[in-house]
Image (cartoon, rainbow, N blue to C red; front, side, top):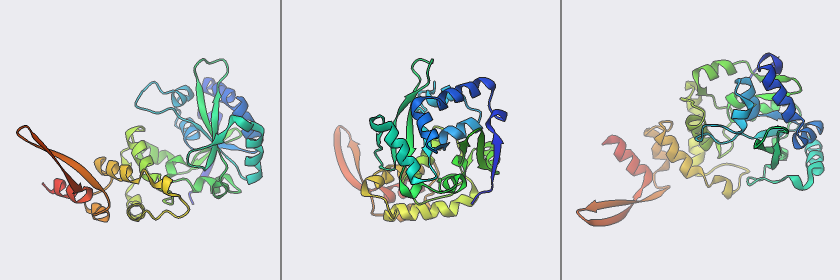
Length: 276
């Protein structure tokens, strides 16, 4: 587990951003979740630590970036159940089934609605903030806002300065798509060298679809994730042998005005193209 430190959020963000943060925390849905024992962690808390504008996080002006959401975690199952009961029909089960999600908005600011997620799956609830953060896939995302303090790994700033991801957990099939997200949308360069071995372990799990506790629907994005990781230079040519025979692709060729299609093994074709 990472070594975590705690600093006042007021020492990180400007007074104007602090006012906006307090407005967000007083939004009905967020307030109910926090008063029920929840705490904010993940992308939104990371954005605060990164001194990113709250408005830009929730409603980015760059259309290549998706709007951020606010994820709320709990230390006890009953706290999560209380929050979802109080919110009633304002929240519904997420597509993945790990949280209840809904929407909220900042009062006094037009067109600034945002998505909230109340993480209520039993296997994602831990008795301490630090244990919760330790289950996140990237050390870079192990940031929480608890009361007026931000909690994060001591190595966080060094990772952000280098724009490199450090993997902490490979249990979920979604990690590949998240690596791609941070490279394409967040400007990260890749993985730290010490994450290469554990990333290789994730590739083996992806090749065998071996993600215990996850349903088939959770693994549907694996093919796209691996192919995009290869395109982004994160998956090496040598690692493609893991995927030989796994995915087929239809290719098209033209000879003069005649068009023909043929089937190829994706990994075999990618290896051949890399060697050409």
